[in-house]
Amino acid sequence: MLNGKVAVVTGASRGIGRAVALKLAGEGATVIINYNGSKERAEEVKKEIEAAGGKAEIRQCNVSDFSACGEMFKEIISTFGSVDILVNNAGITRDGLLMKMSEEDYDAVLNTNLKGTFNCIRFVARQMIKQRGGRIINMASVSGVLGNAGQANYSASKAGVIGLTKSVARELASRGVTVNAVAPGFVNTEMTEVLSDKVKEGAVAQIPIGKFGEPEDIANAVAFLASDDAGYITGQVLNVDGGMAM
Image (cartoon, rainbow, N blue to C red):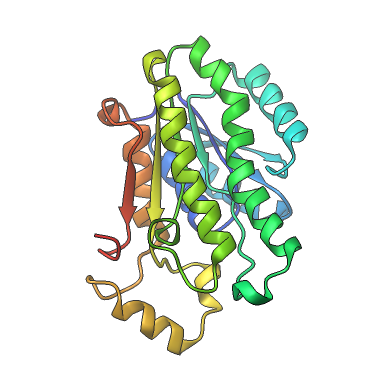
């Protein structure tokens, strides 16, 4: 259980982030729901958590903005006293073939997915070191492990998240802070709903289990890595992908 813990989940207004926020709150954590543009959805997640007897607050911040991240975490630590769990889930896609990919689309994905993860870690690391404990879980992707045609920017950002995870894990391990990544495969979210039936069928054919995962599958893995049971696990990438990247 995560009773008494304060958890920040970025990009928590929908999809995997929403499922993670609900799961951590269900385990007893006070959850800070970060969102960028979806305030109404963030409020809905907060209400859902509270209706189930949990505790939640919302905070707006574009994680790609270094100074804005600094202000957000300063306020959260001042208000709640600590950040015990950080889940870097915020992410975007701007898919397209490399030959046609614009600099803007490449930069936007790297800035949110990779730089955003760095920004958030940067501003919680000192607090976690000070309290000599913490859990950082970064959302990678099977695309960052295997690569994926049409996702050069996304795959690069998620491969970068894996490298960042391992480096920070080495830096913080002696202070009682674990840093791990979860690499989802194809999951039933709004991000995959837009895929054509042909693309979905091709994806399922690559999954040994033979189906897309659910957001709750990812949330369960995150909750484990956030728990005391995972205290001797750091610098790892947990693939939750139905066997795609075995």
